Length: 93
Image (cartoon, rainbow, N blue to C red; front, side, top):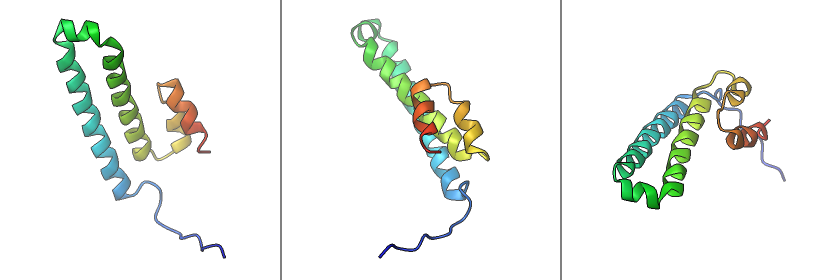
C-alpha cells in the first residue's frame, strides 16, 4: 500500500534557507583552505588538480545554496555557471 504524499510548506522554507547559509559558509571555508594551500608554491605545483577540485567543491556549494534561496528554481538552475552541475539540476524537472 502506497503511503500518502504529505503536503508541506513551500520549497523555500526557513530550514532550506538555513541549509543554504551553511552551504555558503562551507564554500567560503573550503575556498580559504584552497587559497591557503596555494600560498605554498611547492604545494600548489604538486597538487594543482586537487586544488582545482577544492575550488570546484566551493563553486558547487555556492550554486546549491543559491538554488535553496531561489523563488524560481528553474530560472536559477539556468544561471548555474558550472555546466556539469547545471545539467544534473535540470534532471530534477
